[in-house]
Amino acid sequence: MIDAVIAYFNTICAMPDELVDDLRELVRIKDFKKDSFLLKSGQVSNYASWILTGLTRSYYLRDTEEVTTKFLWEGATITSVYSFYSRKPGNENIVAIEDTTVAMLHYNEMQTLYKKHPAFNTIGRVITEKYLYMLEIEVYNLRKQKGEDKYQFIVKHFPHLLQRVPLKYLATYLGMNLETLSRIRGKR
Amino acid sequence: MIDAVIAYFNTICAMPDELVDDLRELVRIKDFKKDSFLLKSGQVSNYASWILTGLTRSYYLRDTEEVTTKFLWEGATITSVYSFYSRKPGNENIVAIEDTTVAMLHYNEMQTLYKKHPAFNTIGRVITEKYLYMLEIEVYNLRKQKGEDKYQFIVKHFPHLLQRVPLKYLATYLGMNLETLSRIRGKR
DNA sequence: TCCTGAATTTGATGTTTGTCAATTGCTTTG
DNA sequence: CAAAGCAATTGACAAACATCAAATTCAGGA
Image 1 (cartoon, chains in turn red, green, orange, cyan):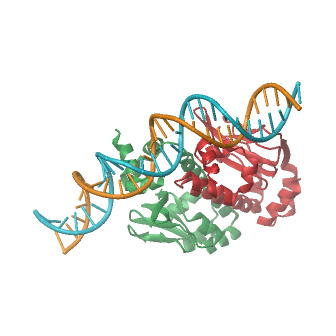
Image 2: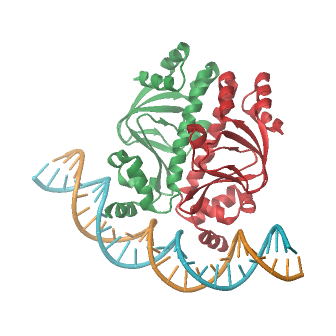
């Protein structure tokens, strides 16, 4: 399983053998059953994870409503950005929507790798850049005025989400309520 | 002027003298008069810049309307993420709202520094992480349902923007139109 | 298979926001 | 100082969306 992560990192920057050895030792594979939590609000996010199989949902509570901020699936990097980088408890929850397997690296061990292996800084930087780029795409969609346009963006770019994600979560992700999303879908 | 940038980088990661020397040679200071463009859509963004003084606005065109995506001011890092990282022309415009002075580093020279100086990877990574964190805060605000709440977030966290930015830009930044923003403000 | 609860759709209605138009206020420049 | 141009406000109305309620469809477990 861990080979997939190693291979992915190697596409970003060729890693020296010692770095690969360290990764094999430090990266842990973990399974999360559907509906189990990778992170709960109030906790400090101590791990960056790479999703090997499955799908997760990130959300926070606004009053009593769950506001979905992100869906992540195979190949994605996942953590709570705020909590992981600031080392403080955050308000973000991450839950498995499907049975999910991830490769995890602890914050402290990541810092160790950054200090020890220059190449790992490059990998960390490039992964962060990719994450940033994906986030900008999301924001671009969120700033659209009409619900219809936001929904069509998902249809066009992430159609598999429609098969894998309950509409109630997709609705808050797109900043509308469930009934509105249902009506938009019904228009066709 | 460039000392401010060097000092800032040093707070992230102590830089060896050769890196500092390289930066002094490669980083250029440039002034942009109010209303002049740091980047126009269709161009490839070749520079990452640090704002020393002033304020900029990033926006793109949706049909004929300018949609503001970002305000950046003293201390911020500025580039078009998509274009700078992908090396392709983007749809983003960056314009100076006030007279603005920036320290600029060219993409190619940045890559050179990454290869030559491990410490610079750390700096690049940390700056990217900070940018990412700021973007998440923006998205958090954008996902709020009511215009009133989004506006109050600005009042609370970035009140200086209200003094420095015309309302018409703030409106599209918050995803509402000018009249709606004006009415929200008038409620008090 | 049937039952139960969850997911989704549909309906009626009120609130918020967008749009268009006009007005007022401000600023800058000749 | 006056005129011109831009910024901001206000009003009237329409469109989009939220809310509350109920009905229908779907899926998993007994």
